[in-house]
Length: 413
Image 1: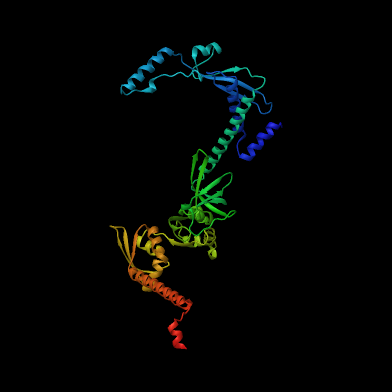
Image 2 (image 1 turned 60 degrees about the horizontal axis):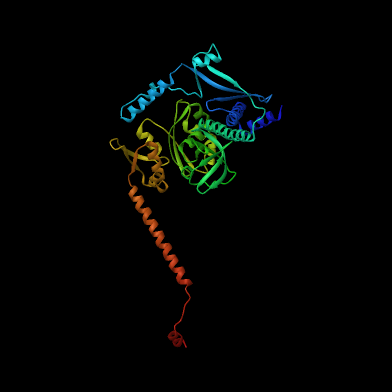
């Protein structure tokens, strides 16, 4: 194997690029170099390069088209332009065009090949110079570098575009301001602030799972946006951890998530013998605990989905026990009653439980007695503030040094 073959193979292995793409890049670079030093204006230069022998052949490649009257074509073009300036609607597709760089008329083509036909490709072999000039070699080098970068970007874009919505392993590389950059193999992904979980601090070298949100081509290359906050991440984690979900026996119907804090997930079994909640929880809670650990301790409530809206709302508000409820389909709301000792549980910390249940069921949920709990919470908070203030005032008075006036000193004496 020659040095050139070895170098090309090394590039292919490092950049994960097919050898055909590198060969095409070299041929494009050599064509650009030839065109710069030896080519003519109307030549369509194509190069055929043999990696093994390192020999090349140069051709002027043109497509055969029907004979045209160039003067008549120019006249038609001028007439159309005049109509266009006059405000008339024109159909430019009816105007025939002839590109002397890439096309050759049939009569002229038959002089080169008597068997020439319309749409046939005519290759005219050109003389290959003994050696390219210094500028040509530099041009070839620049084109090769540029084309290799483009090929690498295209491969990365194609690879990860197909993975949109999928779960991918990542390693935290660095943090710049509020943005975190992750190594996902061959390239970096961007984890924006709004796609980060509230309870997570990302440290260089940390391994985690992410969901690919979008892959877009930019002037700087593929931009891969990923997320740790979306419900899709939770869904993919359950698919990866629970075989019944991956096979379709158990279906995730809907998810309500406050990333990093708490989530509710509604599941349904398509086989009576399979318990959907038990499948997701796993033996001794091993399956769901693995997911909780991956999400940094985020709490996960798994409830059974039901076609009966009343039953589903009751399930969604768990672990609180509902005594009764009244549906209002006109404004898509429901009034729920729970025992007094269940009020705090139904509402949840900062209203989290009822808020997630509302998202899960896609209904506005009003809990009877919630105002009383809210007032008691506010009263308790105000009382705590006053006690804290009084405590600070006492501490301040104790720390203030006592200064006796001159009159008090005389009285004491």
